[in-house]
Amino acid sequence: MSYTDELSLLAEATRYLFGSILLVREADLSAPTPCRDWDLRRLLWHVRTSLADVTDVLAVPASRGDPDVDPAAGPDAVAALRAGIVDFLVASTSLPTAGRWCEIHGRSLPAKIVVYVGAIEMVLHAWDIAQACRTDRPIPSDLASALLRVSPPLAEAGLLGHVFDEPLAAPETATPSDQLLALFGRQPIGPGSSGT
Image 1: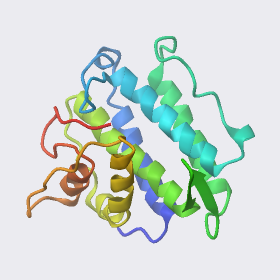
Image 2: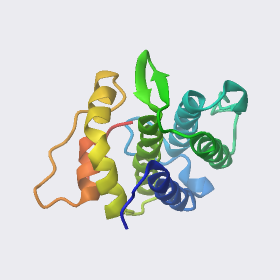
Image 3: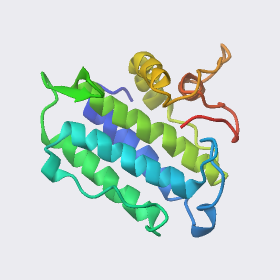
Image 4: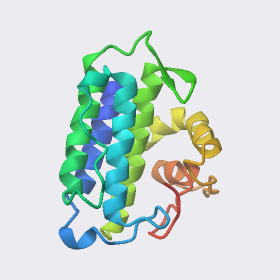
């Protein structure tokens, strides 16, 4: 399958994230993740907040839910993340992205790129979630390849903003999944890498 527009890519990214969320059990919430010093509960809340931030950029502020819940006070991080994904999808699909520009941290970006930022956030952390649940779920090749086409400048911007770790070298034989993970500072094989 190839992705001809950002919404098709977004749908596949969402499917991949939901697949990882289905792995989460109560006992996993305190498990370590590839994101340094974060357990799974904190990671789930981070993804929820990150998607809410992207949703704010794409949509009218009134459409935003309430992501600013203290992770320690919110016992159901999985349910909160599911709600955040729905909010992000509504914001991504309710307004046309063609010709629209959005501002993130003082930089103007095409709305289409903002949708890609959300998709990358979902895909990378879906992999992190699966790792924390002791499951190997490579990013689907077509999805990883599509994200690799738009990721290098986003990875560089994230590195400058201390959002991601330094890229890792991927072997020449690396799959698209491993290449994407390495670009964002994740160890392609097995848990225990770093990055956020």
